[in-house]
Image 1 (cartoon, rainbow, N blue to C red):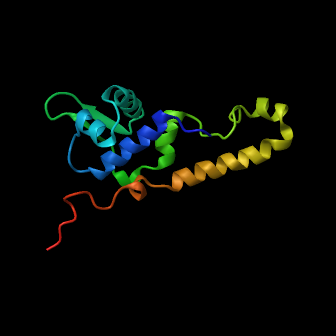
Image 2 (image 1 turned 180 degrees about the vertical axis):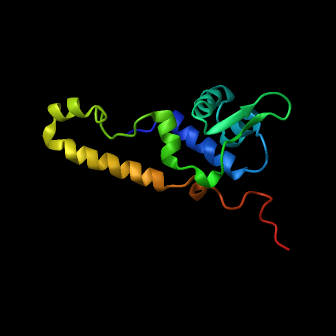
Length: 141
């Protein structure tokens, strides 16, 4: 499994939105600036996340993007599957009949690795990847 730039950026966007959860819709320009990603490329990442209902967008004044549900409900696996499709470690693993006929001796090994990858990524909550204190949120009296 090789995660594309789009997949890595999607994960960064979801983490950024989670870190700013509760601030309403966040403008594309602000997200792009914080993550140092071009707005043009970020638009294609956001379009995929909106299509899969991981985020929602609103146009116009006060518009931008926000999570569709609580940050604690997102996993790295679900975000990566949105942009990458299959997270299988080898091509063709999803087409069991064709893959098994081609390489029957290794099939079980690849299947178990695929299950481990899926399980691990689905256990990583987005909130586990968030910065616990953002600048300005660490004021103590």
